Amino acid sequence: LSYPQEEAPRPERVKPKHTSHIDPDAPFYGRTTAGDAFVGAPQPKRESMRPKAVYKPSGARMETVTTAALDYPIHEVQARERRAVVEYKPTKDDRDWATTDNVAFTKHNAPPPKPFKPAAEFVSGGKFYDATEARDQFPEKHA
Image (cartoon, rainbow, N blue to C red; front, side, top):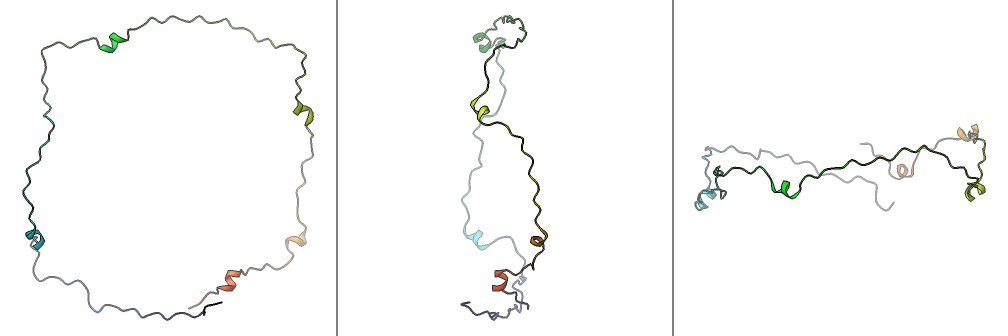
Protein backbone atom coordinates (compact mmCIF):
# COMPACT_ATOMS: atom_id res chain seq x y z
CA LEU A 1 0.00 0.00 0.00
CA SER A 2 1.17 3.52 -0.73
CA TYR A 3 -0.17 5.14 2.47
CA PRO A 4 0.56 4.39 6.14
CA GLN A 5 -2.10 2.54 8.06
CA GLU A 6 -1.98 4.74 11.14
CA GLU A 7 -4.80 6.65 12.69
CA ALA A 8 -4.59 10.43 12.41
CA PRO A 9 -4.64 12.31 15.72
CA ARG A 10 -8.02 13.87 16.42
CA PRO A 11 -8.27 17.33 17.95
CA GLU A 12 -9.91 17.58 21.32
CA ARG A 13 -13.42 18.93 21.48
CA VAL A 14 -13.77 22.46 22.75
CA LYS A 15 -16.83 23.08 24.90
CA PRO A 16 -18.12 26.65 25.30
CA LYS A 17 -17.69 28.09 28.79
CA HIS A 18 -20.90 30.17 28.71
CA THR A 19 -24.21 30.12 26.86
CA SER A 20 -24.62 32.30 23.77
CA HIS A 21 -28.09 33.48 24.81
CA ILE A 22 -28.24 36.32 27.28
CA ASP A 23 -31.63 37.56 28.53
CA PRO A 24 -32.12 41.31 27.94
CA ASP A 25 -32.59 43.59 30.92
CA ALA A 26 -35.44 45.63 29.40
CA PRO A 27 -38.64 44.15 27.88
CA PHE A 28 -39.27 44.29 24.12
CA TYR A 29 -41.65 47.13 23.17
CA GLY A 30 -42.53 45.84 19.68
CA ARG A 31 -40.81 48.65 17.75
CA THR A 32 -37.42 48.54 16.08
CA THR A 33 -35.05 51.17 14.74
CA ALA A 34 -35.48 49.77 11.22
CA GLY A 35 -39.24 50.10 11.51
CA ASP A 36 -38.91 53.66 12.78
CA ALA A 37 -36.41 54.68 10.07
CA PHE A 38 -38.24 53.21 7.07
CA VAL A 39 -41.89 54.16 7.25
CA GLY A 40 -43.85 53.26 4.12
CA ALA A 41 -46.06 55.72 2.24
CA PRO A 42 -49.79 55.38 2.99
CA GLN A 43 -51.62 53.23 0.45
CA PRO A 44 -55.24 53.74 -0.54
CA LYS A 45 -57.63 50.90 0.29
CA ARG A 46 -58.04 48.49 -2.59
CA GLU A 47 -61.49 47.98 -4.00
CA SER A 48 -62.75 45.31 -6.35
CA MET A 49 -63.21 46.35 -9.99
CA ARG A 50 -65.98 43.77 -10.48
CA PRO A 51 -69.43 45.31 -10.52
CA LYS A 52 -71.86 44.35 -7.81
CA ALA A 53 -74.05 41.39 -8.73
CA VAL A 54 -77.53 42.83 -8.66
CA TYR A 55 -80.43 41.07 -10.35
CA LYS A 56 -82.41 43.41 -12.57
CA PRO A 57 -85.42 41.61 -14.03
CA SER A 58 -86.73 42.78 -17.38
CA GLY A 59 -90.41 43.05 -18.19
CA ALA A 60 -90.21 40.66 -21.21
CA ARG A 61 -91.44 37.07 -21.04
CA MET A 62 -88.90 34.29 -21.24
CA GLU A 63 -88.62 32.40 -24.53
CA THR A 64 -89.55 28.73 -24.37
CA VAL A 65 -87.83 27.67 -27.62
CA THR A 66 -84.05 27.74 -27.86
CA THR A 67 -81.96 28.39 -30.97
CA ALA A 68 -80.55 24.85 -30.74
CA ALA A 69 -84.09 23.42 -30.89
CA LEU A 70 -84.80 25.59 -33.94
CA ASP A 71 -81.52 24.64 -35.69
CA TYR A 72 -81.75 20.90 -35.01
CA PRO A 73 -85.34 19.65 -35.31
CA ILE A 74 -86.25 16.11 -34.22
CA HIS A 75 -86.33 13.60 -37.08
CA GLU A 76 -88.44 10.50 -37.18
CA VAL A 77 -86.32 7.33 -36.86
CA GLN A 78 -87.31 4.42 -39.06
CA ALA A 79 -86.87 0.89 -37.70
CA ARG A 80 -84.34 -1.18 -39.61
CA GLU A 81 -85.34 -4.40 -41.23
CA ARG A 82 -83.53 -7.42 -39.78
CA ARG A 83 -82.14 -10.12 -42.01
CA ALA A 84 -83.31 -13.67 -41.56
CA VAL A 85 -81.01 -15.94 -39.55
CA VAL A 86 -79.23 -18.43 -41.79
CA GLU A 87 -78.22 -21.79 -40.33
CA TYR A 88 -74.49 -22.59 -40.56
CA LYS A 89 -73.61 -25.23 -43.12
CA PRO A 90 -69.98 -26.40 -43.19
CA THR A 91 -68.34 -26.42 -46.61
CA LYS A 92 -67.54 -29.72 -48.22
CA ASP A 93 -64.35 -29.45 -50.19
CA ASP A 94 -61.48 -31.86 -50.62
CA ARG A 95 -58.65 -29.34 -50.48
CA ASP A 96 -55.34 -30.16 -48.83
CA TRP A 97 -55.04 -27.73 -45.90
CA ALA A 98 -51.49 -28.81 -44.97
CA THR A 99 -48.99 -25.96 -44.96
CA THR A 100 -45.29 -26.18 -45.66
CA ASP A 101 -44.55 -25.53 -41.99
CA ASN A 102 -46.78 -28.41 -40.90
CA VAL A 103 -45.14 -30.72 -43.42
CA ALA A 104 -41.54 -29.67 -42.64
CA PHE A 105 -41.84 -29.56 -38.85
CA THR A 106 -43.68 -32.57 -37.56
CA LYS A 107 -44.50 -32.96 -33.88
CA HIS A 108 -42.40 -35.43 -31.91
CA ASN A 109 -43.32 -36.56 -28.42
CA ALA A 110 -39.93 -36.44 -26.71
CA PRO A 111 -39.49 -37.89 -23.22
CA PRO A 112 -39.19 -35.29 -20.44
CA PRO A 113 -35.61 -34.44 -19.38
CA LYS A 114 -34.24 -36.28 -16.35
CA PRO A 115 -33.41 -34.08 -13.34
CA PHE A 116 -29.69 -33.52 -12.78
CA LYS A 117 -28.37 -34.27 -9.32
CA PRO A 118 -24.65 -33.61 -8.75
CA ALA A 119 -22.51 -36.28 -7.17
CA ALA A 120 -21.78 -36.03 -3.43
CA GLU A 121 -18.06 -35.23 -3.90
CA PHE A 122 -18.93 -32.08 -5.86
CA VAL A 123 -21.36 -30.84 -3.23
CA SER A 124 -19.36 -31.25 -0.01
CA GLY A 125 -15.82 -31.67 -1.25
CA GLY A 126 -13.59 -29.02 0.30
CA LYS A 127 -13.33 -26.11 2.72
CA PHE A 128 -15.33 -22.95 2.13
CA TYR A 129 -13.01 -19.95 1.86
CA ASP A 130 -14.92 -17.04 3.36
CA ALA A 131 -12.20 -14.34 3.25
CA THR A 132 -12.51 -11.73 0.53
CA GLU A 133 -9.91 -9.47 -1.03
CA ALA A 134 -11.53 -6.40 0.46
CA ARG A 135 -11.45 -7.93 3.94
CA ASP A 136 -7.77 -8.84 3.48
CA GLN A 137 -6.78 -5.38 2.24
CA PHE A 138 -8.86 -3.35 4.72
CA PRO A 139 -8.77 -5.04 8.11
CA GLU A 140 -11.17 -3.84 10.80
CA LYS A 141 -9.72 -1.51 13.42
CA HIS A 142 -10.91 -2.26 16.93
CA ALA A 143 -10.83 0.71 19.29
